[in-house]
Image 1 (cartoon, one colour):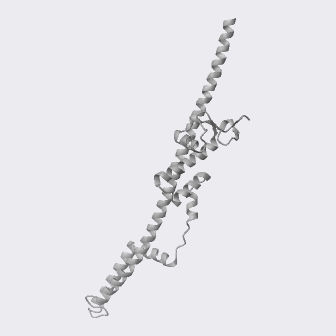
Image 2 (tube, rainbow, N blue to C red):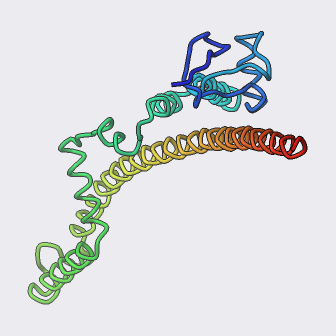
Length: 232
């Protein structure tokens, strides 16, 4: 297999991974030149080495844009370098087992915010009032104006409100975690798209170089044919 020597690492690589300095994007070319001052437009670098500089460039870009890389960006960059997905591992990394109180809060909030609760609650009120007014002729255990009933309703409202707020807080935490996951997936998709653009640019330039080389060979062949015809 035909090989070439990289001007960056001085190692040999297959010729299909050869990339010339002149075909590299200027920002990444400057990044290579920072660590290898002798690198120029006529120098050669391997594609896998170029990808490492691209990843370093993306990391530096995140630092410049966000001023500081958070744990989310570190996770995204790690997955990006490992060429692994994020969406299928986020649920495994953040498994939360709700406590008994949290499960009770969720059930109370779910039941308290349903038409079933309104129906049962309305039925209890009707029965309570009917027993005291109709059956006991307003001389029962809670005559009009139903002071005991008002006390019970006030206690239920006082207890139900914080329970529902606890459940809403847990839902907000879930929404924040979901937003973080979406952000990480979108960020990795952006990095993959940038890397894909770089690879496509390299592929186009490489194909153009190959076509130019083929055209040069064809022109030489045509010149040889013309020379042979003229001699004859």
